[in-house]
Length: 304
Image (cartoon, rainbow, N blue to C red; front, side, top):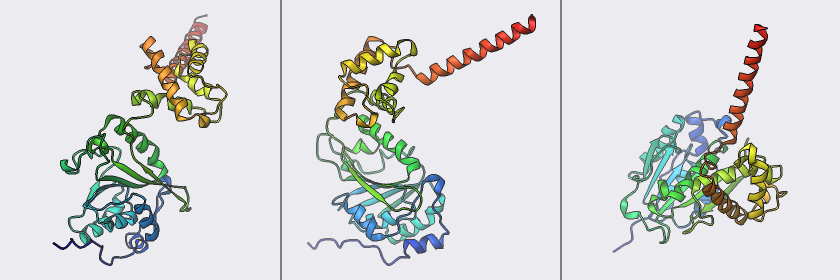
């Protein structure tokens, strides 16, 4: 039996022509940048590996440059999620040119539920090879950090795009302004995480470590503890984790963070209220008490 013909998009207006036709402009406040060169978008999509028969989830397709390259990669289907209404007509043009291949969702990738978007048959056990599900996206700075954190939590909980197994991600990160200096990163989730602690705990330790990213790491890590015990507890954390307190956050390795998370977990087990501690909330309460005291003193002075 003859192999099915490889799908190719018919001749279409270029991305530049689409931008001009629909009067599109990159929103600099959202750190948007358009990828106009199809040779570049083809190269990005090739970084994802063999997409033959794959179910692809593209985030933030914009005017559709990477979308075209994905559609030409012999995929089974492509689901795109785009928040910006301006790009929908151009994407619809691609949808009409690729019947049955492209689904468009006008929505927010941070809230979109993808668990039921693809067939059950593509699911794989976590210990198996990755499923034929790929995430591809050109991420503006405005959304990249919250989205990556969301996906890392999805990996930890094996939900979202990772309900199908160890779905692979190929993501581009762009510099701001008009520079099209693109970094392409390909991720495959590990079967076992390098830090085997709850995601929220790992996130809290890492966030606090980078609180003062240019200062010594003990400054940010100290914010894990209430002020009254901060000095003593921070010293204990770093001593037990065997970490030099004068390292900068960017000098800490994955193994350093593993030690920090393991020791912090032990300290939280010793003091069940510790994990709920939030240094910003302590500052707010302190400030509120100061204001209340000043108001009381002012009222007392009026009485005198």
